Length: 136
Image (cartoon, rainbow, N blue to C red; front, side):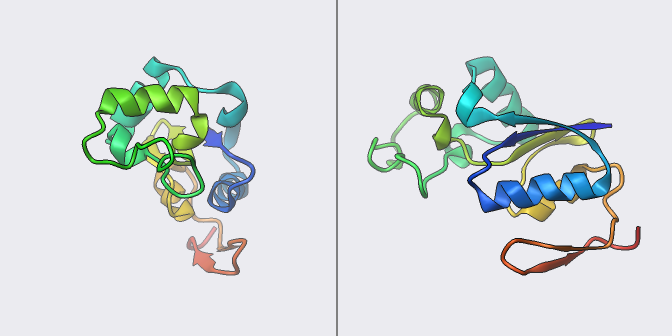
């Protein structure tokens, strides 16, 4: 099974998620979306699969969302999507896709729901938090 991770290497949650996928032994394809950007069909498919709206997927911290006026509840989904296409950093991450589904993996251990072999022992996050994934 191959996991696809839409990854930002500058994000600790994204790095932890990537390392959990690696620790599970899954094949993986990494997409650094800040470099590749997004397409509208891609975002719509990811959001639909993860049961997210553009509002729920909007990254508000460490992004220009507030400066761009996007945190106002009256801003439409179409406007949010347009902004996400122009500013890929506005999409919260990491988003992981496997045959088991699509999830916004915040916190990073959400990825365990998507892995074929999620039980690989103790995993220590960058902040020192330990996650017991169960017996390998």
